[in-house]
Structures are given as C-alpha cells and as structure tokens.
Length: 171
Length: 456
Image (cartoon, rainbow over all chains, first blue to last red; front, side):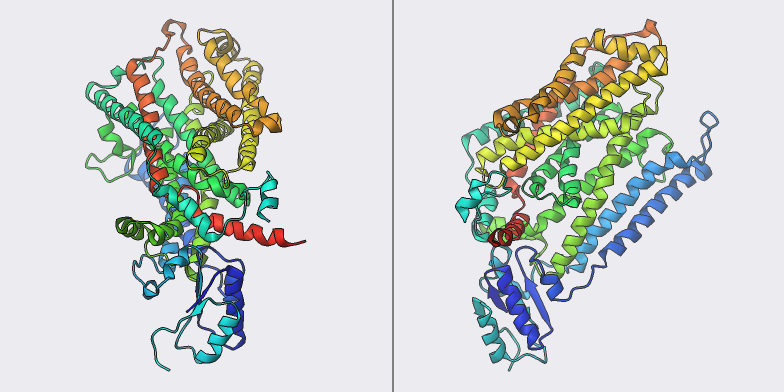
C-alpha cells in the first residue's frame, strides 16, 4: 500500500508500477480521480444492463398485472369503455419501470462494489481513515508475480508517495 | 492564486481550500455546537408538528367534516396543499437530476440540500390525499394486493396513477439521495469527533472505502438514477394534473395542464430552495461554496419558469375564448378575474408574473434581500395558483343553484401551518445529521477546477 497526497501523484505512482509489469492494482480515493479508471483498465459497468432488465420486468409486470386485474379477474363495466384500455395502463407501467430500474441500480451499485461490508482489512492500516478525506492510496496485490518490493518501493517514493507499507505475506 | 480566484464572482467555489480543509468545513455542520436561534427554530417547528399531529388525530376521529370542503367544493385545502407540497419537491429533483445530466457544475453544492427538501416536501404532500380519503386506514386499498374481498383497484382511474406516481417519486428520491450520501457518510465515519457518531455513521456508510470498483459502479448508478428521475419528475406532476384534466369541469378540462403543472412545480420549488438556502448559508457560514453564481443561476431559472407560468395563464384565457364554450368563457374570463375570488387571482398574478421581472437585472439576482422576499412571494403565489384552480373552479360549476363560496375552517389552516412546521423540523434535523453540501463531489469539483486555472 502506498499513500499519496493528491490524485495526480497517485496516477504517477500507478504508471510507474504499470511500467514495471505489475498488474494487480487497486486504489482508494476520497473522490473520483479523473483518468484513474482508464489507467486501471476498468471496463464499463454491467450495472446499466441489470437496471434495464429490472426496468423492463417492472414495467412489463405492471402492465400484465393491470391487464389481468381489469380484463380477467375483476372486469368492471364503466360506461361501456373497453376493459383493455392501453392508454390508461401506461402511467402505472411507466412508474413501475422507473421504480424497479432505480432500485436495481442502487442495489447492484452496492453489491457489485462489495457492500455492505462494514469491516475490511484495509481499515486496520493506521492513517487509512484519511482515505475518505484527503489521502489517496494505491494498493498492490502481494500475489503479483511481477512484484519486486525493493524496486517498487523506490519507484513509488520517486513518484511522490508519502509512505509505502508492505502488509502480510512473506518475501 | 486564491486571491485571483476570489476576485471572480462568477465562481462556483470561492478560494481553493485543500481537500482536508474543505472536508472539515462541510462535515463540521454535523457537530458544531447548537446556536440559540437554532434551538428556537427547533422549538417552534416542534410545537407546530405537535399541533399537526393533534389536528390529524382530530380529523381522523371526527371525520373530514372538520374541513371546509363541501359540495360542490369537494377538493379544498387538502388537495391544494398536496399539489403545492409535491410541486415544491420537483425543483429538488430538477437540480439534482436534470442539471446533473446536463453537466451544470453550479448544481454541485446545492443538490443534496434540494434533495432533502424534495423528500420532506413529498412527505407533507402524501399526508393530505391520505387524510382526504376520509378513512385513511383503508389507504392500502389503492395498491393491488390479493384481497379476501376478491376486488382490485380500478386502474383506469387517475387516483391509483397518483398513488403509484407519488410512491415511486418518494422512493426514487430517497434512493438517489442515499446513494449520493454514502461516500460522505464514510467521511463522517472517519472524521466525526465521538465514537458513537462514528459507529452510527459507519453503519449507514455500509463499509464504503472508495476503491476503484466502488467508485466505478457508484458513478454509473448515480447517473442512471438521475437519468431515470428526469422523466419521473415530469411524469409525476403530469399525472397529478391528469386528476384535474381528465374531468369535464370548466377550468380543469385542458390539455395544457401537464406542462403547466410541471413548470409551476419547478418554479415553486426553486422559490423554496431560495427561501431555505439563504438563511442556512448564513448560519453555517458557507459563503465560499454557495456563491453569487448559484443565486444568479437560480434566479434566472425562476424568471424562465415565471414566463412559462405566464404563458400558461394566457393560453388558458385564449383557449377559453377560442373554445366558445359558455362555461369555460365564464370561468376564465369572468369568474377568475372579476368574481368573488378576484383578489386571489390578482395577487397570484403579481407574485408569479410581475415580482419576478426584477430578475432581468443582474444586481437584483445577486441581492439576497430581494431574492428572499421574491421567493416568499412566489411560494405564496404558487399556493394561490392551486387555490385558483381548485376552489375557484369548483365553486362555480355548471349548475348555478349549487354555487357555493368556500371558506377554510381553523382545522384547514392549522393543518397547513402544521405541515410547514413538520417540514421545518425534518429539515432542521437533516441539516444537523448529514453534511448538506456534498463533500466528495465538492472536492472532485475543486480538483477539476484547479488544473484549468493553472493553464496559462
């Protein structure tokens, strides 16, 4: 783990490690750092597809339910108007599509991000509480084959790391 | 560099504080000591809330005969207040969702504030149709559930649409608000002064640690929720307006109602944001994050919405005349401007269309006293607009023998005042419990602004 005091410095450290072939990288930042996701090669979030599916299911379900209520299970004749009145079913269909898509977006944002998880090993690092305030942390997986502790420590410090900590694992 | 940044009054953030300083300034609103004015406001709002609950109890026990509604004015204060409160909520969603999608960076420091306003306004709004049912303990009949009575709601009526729209609106607003709040709750978990606070905020932060994965999904979900809330906010008030427009009553039966209601809603919401943010900014000394630029932009929005309202009034008059329908002509061209309630009409016109013309002047858009007074006038004017639509139209329907002048009872007035107090109570609590200026977003905005300035 390496601690930086700004987003651009973190990106510098990240590029230095990348250049030496390290690939198991993660970062913890107080806010979104521009360019960080691209530098880590993150792909587009799958979340939009989940939300789309949930929205379609919610809207479709709402329409079918309204049709079933009005046409099949409890038909009421009101001034001879058609039981299956598509325009009158649209408002609820639309609202339910929005509701289900939104709920799916919220829940999948949490679940895909690994939340809720109240405790995580990184919280044990002293000073990590500033990761939500004004410190930017870069993490390297200890299992990475391209890792060379001495070399990478120097590289990170050259890039402006305030401190470099090696946690767990041997060698 | 700080001096040069402060010199430009068009800035959305004055000065360039460090991440740590900005965090402390914005997070500390939750742990600074209470001031005397604060406690006084809390006491007043608390007392009004108690009054609200007493009057709700009275209404439920004795029935809505306690209200001034009677045939033909079957929709009195209850529905006026409902439409007024829910309209206020709309500016919150407008600022947080539509302006996010449009990438307007002046929304950043005020969006959580307005989202909070939305939530609490919708809570007040929900109270009125519930009580207006007369038997609020049967409110769940509006939702489809497999009942032992073998019946279902009538989904071809506008009222179940309303129930679906308002419920969805509340839930989606809550989700958008909470999602945006998570990183800031984590910051509070790490920064708050006492252990108890850290534990409570920690639970609500769900273990957020700002990893790349978390930010990636968070950002997409936030944009997506904003994108979904955008058509939602338009649909909710359109559906509310369909409660009116789908009837045959003169003054209601009009195709202009959905856009007219949506614009009016955003108009009144901006006015209430202004009313609330001017004192809050002063009390919490946030002059550097809520700047003249924000007031300027909001005043311009109010001016635009005011013109849309004016256009709608003109269109109503024109269409009444053009339709040739004698009831419409009487309602719009005789009853509203010259009838018994003419005072409401002219006051509304002054508040909504004339007072706002001050905002053509840049100096007025940045004068807080003018903004505050005009925003109060707009709140009043928009309430009167709903009064105009509901009471004035109903009191003069097709049959002159049933014409009737509506007068509110003390319970009506008490309920309206009570909801103002309850709204205030919730809002005061919100200002103290969570950072009401989004901290992470402000820091990202600062980081985004910084390189642009260092360029030659």
